[in-house]
Length: 172
Image (cartoon, rainbow, N blue to C red; front, side):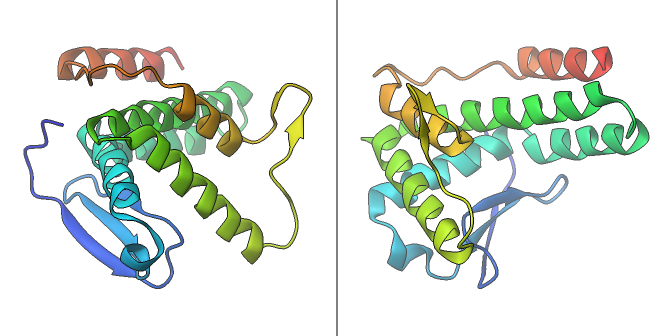
């Protein structure tokens, strides 16, 4: 994934799922029961996903988007743009699961397991099906992962990635 820096791994009882964090000192936070709750292939797929977030500098871009929303709190386009940035970064990071054997399936299974844990923790809300598609973002991600074409991982050049993000935020 062309990461140049060391990535710090941390564990916490407070985490329900792995997270990528850090702008200057990048890291991945793991739930304490990560190794016990997930199979080896699921762990590899989730770590590939989180490493893809770090490779794309997503924590930086999310902070920048949050800053813009803070400054432009009254503008609905600012909120919409931040939401679209989050969705796009999740979908792009999901594709890193192609680097792992059976990665998309393993990541989809782990997303369903995480969704089940969250639903169990919060007795309200559910992941339902509406007509021909999913209502939840989680359901759409799982469906997309299961349909992901079996192709090689293609790394996006850093210059092109910066250009796309910068022009999107500059447009806002």
